[in-house]
Image (tube, rainbow, N blue to C red):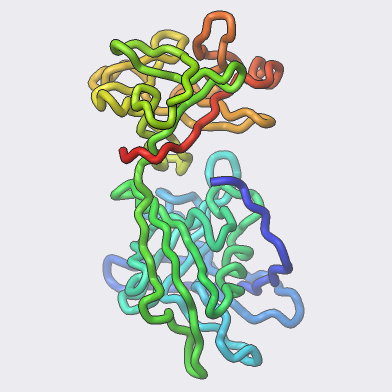
Length: 332
């Protein structure tokens, strides 16, 4: 997913807080605070969750507000609820993290979209909300409130239990009484692993697995030759950062991993080998960073024809040493 900047004006949302108690096992305590609002904006409730074991899993001090969408009657001050709350925390890097909570079983989020409690909001209508410095709690509430009527809307969520990303497409329409989901407009699409070709950008060679060895070769048939194909899976780790694995398509017991300081093929059962990576874009290059050794980057060594671990300073200095990924049409 690429970073996408918001365009147009997003209204400030007023927030007030109250002490709220749930029912039974769903009791949640909130502290009472106040915040001022811009003139002319509608009042919205904002809660600050107290430190409970459940909230700590998301963040030490998230904010929680009921989610509303714009009423069909543009002259009305009242918005219509989507049937749940937005809970906002932050990741260790200070970027925002948003999740759905306190969902109503008969509300739009749970009933129509099959959203589950604590599902992570990844993006909304093209705006990347996960890991953003820009889209804070109030801005995301405003994004929901300004969703268009009768135009296709897309939302990407992540379920932590199943470790799956789901794209939800839908249409909203309004009556005098309420906003509803247009009949038969909802599409739920679980994101499947993708088969990709991994190229060394500097000399246009591609990673290939032959005789269980990792090599770099040039070929005109990389898109159709499974020797060059890797099944790429992604999910969120415990800190809500994306991480990736690269499975050899022709031998699914093999993965890309570290052999000492260089990229190699490792067995799925080799627990000592690092087989998961993060991605980072530096200037125009994308680099893989092995999980657990996040201060190092896999950089292409043109002389040795391999990817090896280097410092961030090296990645900044030597442009074109990253990895380039191309989607194929092959099924995983």
